[in-house]
Image 1 (cartoon, helix red, strand yellow):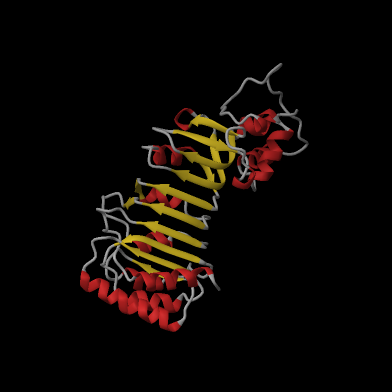
Image 2 (cartoon, rainbow, N blue to C red):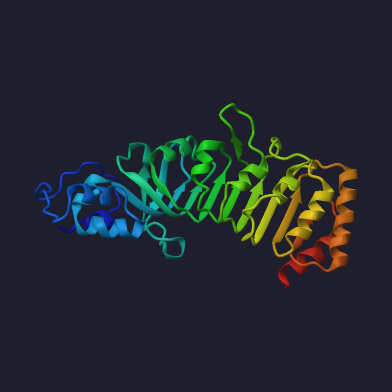
Length: 301
């Protein structure tokens, strides 16, 4: 009973009427309870795809759309879903537009999730539709996100780009940056851009708290952008030394004080004198020659 149409045409179904005839009761030769368990709890997305291609029973019992990529960049809850990973995706041909609010199937995300500025109210709807989230790449722009929802995306994500988001607890209090970073169990790349007006996620203890985290052993790249001056200069220096194998960029916002710039200049001089590669500190109005030295060292290892 070939149901390959489910894979080749990724639309959402719940209980569907199959072309030609209704689905038939199967004689498995195994206990019905065992087959039911296999249908409900497939071991992987690849196994699930093979199951639904082999027999429509499995999709009827557990209707799930497997998607390598989900990109939300339109108003409300519309998105593009693709079965192919990014390097295999042919934009406009293999991606399908969907309104997930109307989806009767659950969604199994396997590689990348991107949610842009225009996708208002998308995250809580998506969370209600997820079957499993096993993404490697997470990109979210300009959203207010409940921490409970945010954690759904973090268990497997390795490359993270978060820009001008506000992550809050249920009582409205902000989640600190170190708590956000702690959620990612296997992080390799972490880029975070702060909003111009909301810098409540960081304080003088932030870098010290980040250095205590146990999940950063595989980290290769770390970037913080539009930073306020609330971070301790001493802790920034200690962070550079502890994570000497990591490519680090710290770019500060335009509102930092002259006194803080002077302290940053002293740290920049220390970095340049040490010859350390892949360290960049930037702010508006800094010495251009020193900025160029750090930039050139970034690309030469």
